[in-house]
Image (cartoon, rainbow, N blue to C red; front, side):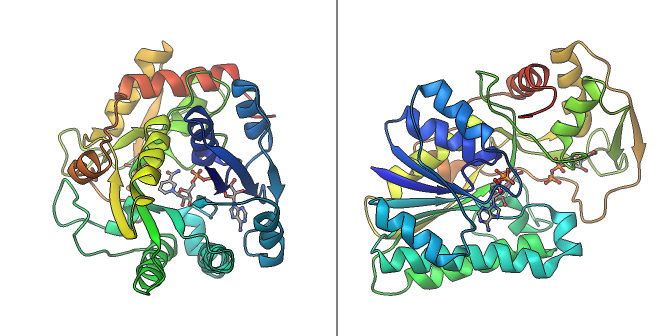
Length: 336
Ligand code: NAD
Ligand code: UDP
């Protein structure tokens, strides 16, 4: 089966391409390389001794996309391409809505033209806003608190409307919690531009000595140690979740919505301790004010994904940190 992967050279995209190849799928990769490097795909090719057709294009460019669909018999699309920084989305809402909504519209429109009906979308736990109850189930009301999460909610609604036609779409909406870690090979991993926003890349760069210390955003949350709690999931578990979801949605027309997390919460200090243990390095930190827009606790109820996808995240926090550290030490300059 031939799958078009948008955002294929990005962090989650590249790991999913690896798992797709591993599972015997054929992949056609597209990305505009605004937040990634083609080297990630080259590493996947090296890992599996294969060639992956790649097209550098902006998915909003429908004529470029059509050429790819003309050339390859695409049977399904996994759509990762998008802008993902919450803070940046507040500063650049015009760009975020245009890219995230426009990219999705363009993909679905071209798919419609080519009668391709199987589509998997990267949503996010941020669609839950500040949840009323924990662990978070899929059926609670959604509430985006910034342009990024609102763009995800709008796309989810659009997909639901696309499904509510007589066209028999097979759609999957996967709401990711906090993906971290890297491929066991140490060949692919997360390679943020500039200073990382997310906890694990920041901690990794402190451990390796690139950044002096970690600033922990808030020590006064109502959590056992006062720091924020999140559901960290290994990016390979997440990638495998996509394959399971693809196999389920293609069986019959539906909109499948599933949380992809571990169902376990870890505080910032838990992560710091785990990373210190793994790396054997001290992570100096200072506790500062809360980061605007952060919530105290977020972790998933994964029962639906466990049942419907026959999938369960298997890696624990220690292994996620080990893999992130291996990637960091083998690639101190990322893909460069
Ligand atoms: P990433 O930035 O590493 O990957 C996204 C890729 O999309 C990049 O390679 C970028 O160059 C590409 N891209 C962006 N706009 C494009 C466009 N218009 N045309 C073509 N390519 C384009 O991000 P990621 O962490 O791999 O995230 C993948 C998806 O998962 C995103 O949609 C993101 O919102 C979602 N998500 C990520 C997280 C996370 O913590 N990483 C959590 C929840 C959801
Ligand atoms: N965090 C932190 N310092 C950092 C980055 C993150 O204390 O430099 C905290 C953040 O407040 C949250 C957790 O780490 O409690 C995870 O943040 P991240 O940005 O990785 O993911 P988010 O859950 O915000 O999407």
